[in-house]
Image 1 (cartoon, rainbow, N blue to C red):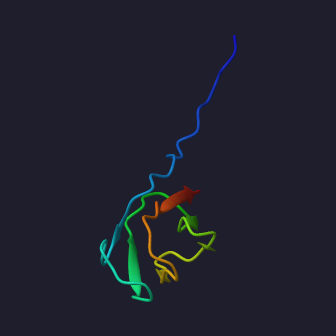
Image 2: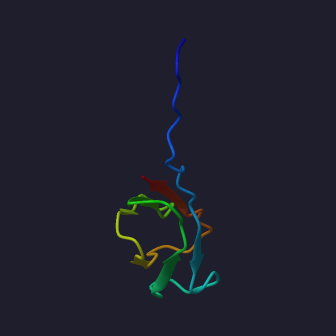
Length: 74
């Protein structure tokens, strides 16, 4: 007979909102992290800038369209 136990830990779910999505160069953008079951965060702002805080703020120095990514880590 063998027993197999699976972990009761949930995988984190990444979620965030931005204070603004259409801004001018140099405007401050606040990111509100609504992730669940995470202890650490890896932000990629799409302009070669990164952050690890829960709710970062960011500005862009060049005009363009940027894809922001958040990785939630348990």
